[in-house]
Image 1 (spheres, rainbow, N blue to C red):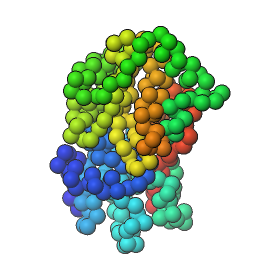
Image 2 (cartoon, rainbow, N blue to C red):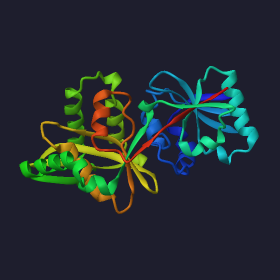
Image 3 (cartoon, one colour):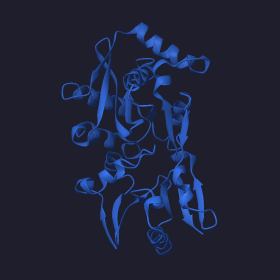
Image 4 (cartoon, rainbow, N blue to C red):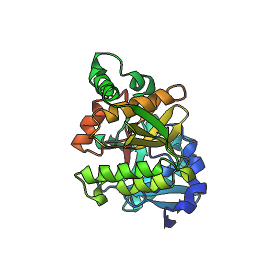
Length: 289
């Protein structure tokens, strides 16, 4: 067995494998792994002819992450991983989507999930318009923003990057969390290295002033994941406007927007649930009995 810290050198080794996994979970893309490499202490594990990613969850559980569906493995490969799990101090195999649970029969494996890990998915068509009674608050917030300000959306590029970085500083100054406990560092790195990682985004303006930005990437053919969304909340309704605008631009190509997990933070959970998720993508933890 060989292990090494995940680095940019590993991009060519694992990016194609991750891109081939047609599921909704945000972890299965290289930029997400790379920008949060320090948070989760990601490492590459070479186990004979099997390559895995090792990491540490937000609740301090050590896990092994497969780089392709276990259904594609010959049986001895899965057994090899299971034996490795039992022989080391790793706690589980994670994150496993519901589509893969058939590879882990209940008589041999414990299959659980922590709701704090689950990704929030929203239909782009719904988010673009906020239709119906259940979405009227978001629709009203968006309309209040449009009534109060002259709104504009621009591509996130070298010209608008300084505005996005300025907004990140404004967001950080208003945050109740210390730098080491929020995503300021990963977000700043993602903004600055976005082109090299195939990320795209928009910067949103109110009366010509930078008001917010969104940065993300395609996760699979049907889903676009938003890795970062930051705004200056002095502009009331900015988030409702941003999510509606980005969804309107994406809806012809993508069915879903993945807004990732809430980390068990009450404020973040309340905000994401207020947009009425259409799907909760649970991430199962698999332990050997």
